[in-house]
Image (cartoon, rainbow, N blue to C red; front, side):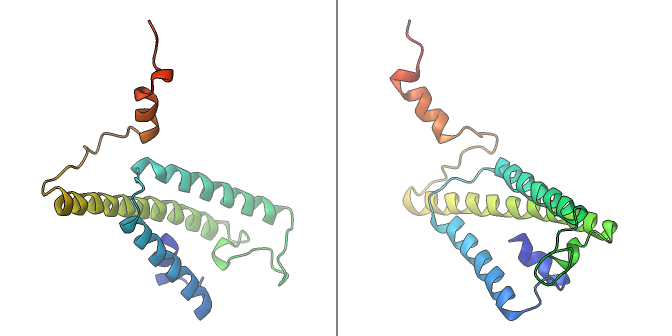
Length: 151
């Protein structure tokens, strides 16, 4: 989703097909968050940031080892051209900031979905507090007799 926001002021998506693919992906994610019953945790943003950082590191190492793509360039994206390291570092920093913003937005959509569900089906608000980050797996483990301490 942050790729779509980023594309508003860059020329990274130069073809109509590229814009279509990234736009449909963003629409799919928004629909999935609003329709599916999967919980969405705010701390999930760390997975996105870690994977993005690994990709940026791989991209820099690839450039330093004279890797080339089919067109003969030493970079895959114009904004990650490590010949201009300042531009590449700013791009990586902006991607991290946009990842945080998009993950926060998706979390707020999740909270909206839970609120709508509680109003429609229960006629009252049943939102869990925001500081309740306990997962479903920990609830299953704590409730299951084989995982509890036997005295």
